[in-house]
Length: 157
Image 1 (tube, one colour):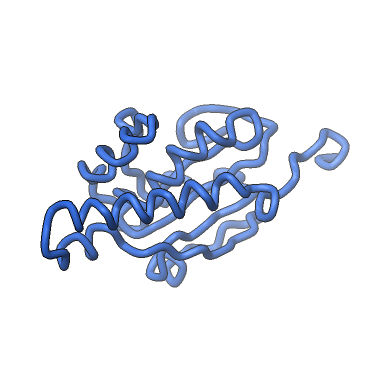
Image 2 (cartoon, one colour; image 1 turned 45 degrees about the vertical axis):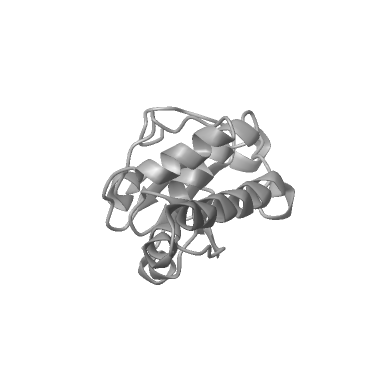
């Protein structure tokens, strides 16, 4: 059973970053849509601190509503059977706890909030969010190269 109370025979994927406010939330949003029926997707953070409003905005631009998602701490997944944990930032990769039975892979993405703070204009800042959003969408769209195959009942016995 997942932290959200769902059961699934689909591969269980968790996207992990530090704040669970931007990159991992984008990945969860795209995963829920693009991998529907293929994988059960969630996200968490090592130090969660709420959804980033600019992330919510740029996801809406491409038709993905993430307002129903929430920041979750990785501890909510203690004891939850996961097939794959994808760390999407370097600090989460370094802090990733041992997840028994899960394949852990790292695919780092730039930090849009940090880049936006350094931007000269608001539009330039939003451009960083959009670029990372599009990179994450591309990563999710090419899931066969990194998602474990669905387990069959025979595999479990």
